[in-house]
Image (tube, rainbow, N blue to C red; front, top):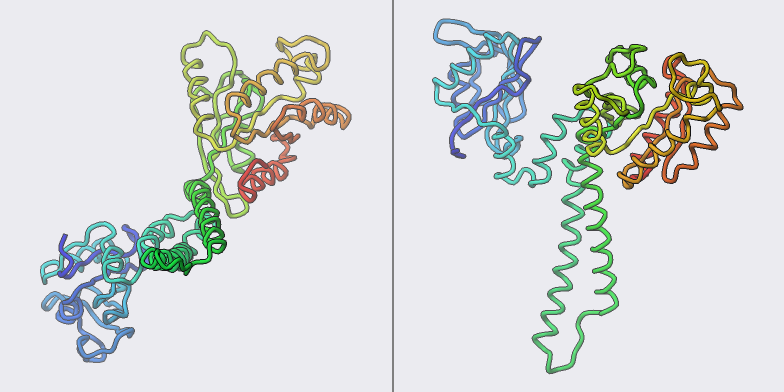
Length: 409
């Protein structure tokens, strides 16, 4: 990769659209485009001041390719720090390629991926963390990842590191001065202030390390695994959260054989929900593979939602074909054991116990469920009806609380 030639690339997304922007950067950017551009004002681009717009035609000899708007930026007052031209043309894929190929024939080189930002970094227009933030900003899909990328691109992270570095350099110079005059028994550095500085730096670095993990999760979407026994409404809950029929819903147990994933934004934060196969003993080989994959997804998830059928647990006599006994909460003890087993296996992961189908229960039944299931240590209980969309807001609030406090909801 050469950094002293003139490069060209499409700056907007590929494909057809109303307009497209083609960026040219390098020492000959203005000269090359000027040879192809016929301005309505009849003035040469080489004579125009920086940060100006010009209407005209891109021409290949006698052939007019398109009427365009050309933006002129003189280095170092440009994104890359070099002479830069941006051509806003009509968004036809044919027009885009015709202009780019014409520029290549005139002496430009096709830019490598990220090369414009690389040149901005090499020319001192941004530091490495800001350059990385450009890609994060482009790929941001929710408010949280957008704000994080904007803060980093503005130099928030860099400024904090720079302040710490300056303080360390100051104290290091004082200590070195003492070493030079060790025989004089003179103290140039205050030991208490030095200890306070080291403690402060340790605290800041610890916070930055923690924020990296949180920031990485926010950028990629927080994975949430929806687990539970078969036919308790996991697919219905996924559809209710996504507000669309994303997963097949059936009364037949074991319908979901593979994981289904989709992402939504809740309160500006991206969550990636994973509908998994129901957990149970089975001789079906395919369903068994699905259950194995369920535990793989639990390991990858940041949050676990354990879903249970509250109507089946409270009134098994209402559920045809149920293998639970008729003693009210007869099946709940087994469910509680299964929940505790998952919690013990993944103690660091936030666990939200969701009792589905509460529309079939009385308020007394719901209260009794809450008391019983809230006893599972380290978990949180949410009653809801996925079918009637009741309690979804409370579940979303629990998920957001986990993000905002950087710990369990």
